[in-house]
Image 1 (cartoon, helix red, strand yellow):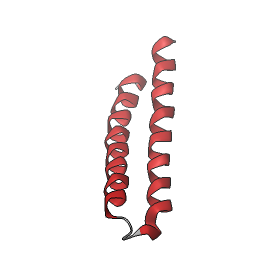
Image 2: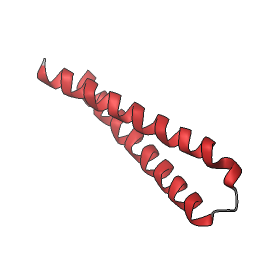
Image 3: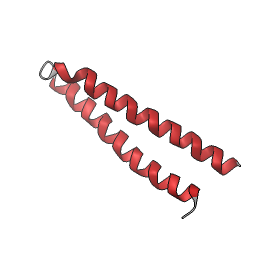
Length: 66
């Protein structure tokens, strides 16, 4: 498997994780004020998931352009 294919596979998995985190954050917002104590944790996990996804997408673009 090439580096590009491996990165594309990783991006697919990261995309699924980021989407799930987005839904977790959405669900939490709908349940407020219940579980308000978890806002920062869920938000940080969502931020981290999308940050990693964005970084991997940039790496893929750089590999494809090389």
